[in-house]
Length: 118
Image (tube, rainbow, N blue to C red):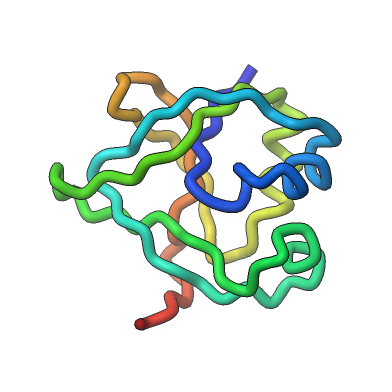
């Protein structure tokens, strides 16, 4: 099983059903040294599933005062590949260590991510 930290739309029931064919059980945790930004979604399948034109995205700051709350889901390798397909090119999957000490996968801003400026 793979640990995946979700802080955004992967926590939504419809997104889980569309991508994994089931609802996921998870545990609350947080990621230190990151803050949330926002990106505009144009992928029609992602828009249809999430119902949201703007999605949150993790931005690495290395600041210990920055923290993002979320949920850790245990998923299969195949489900992780499905999650990779759901996330648009602005996201990159990488390993991280959560506040609890658990190692997991996260989707953070890629170098080419186009962030929405407020």
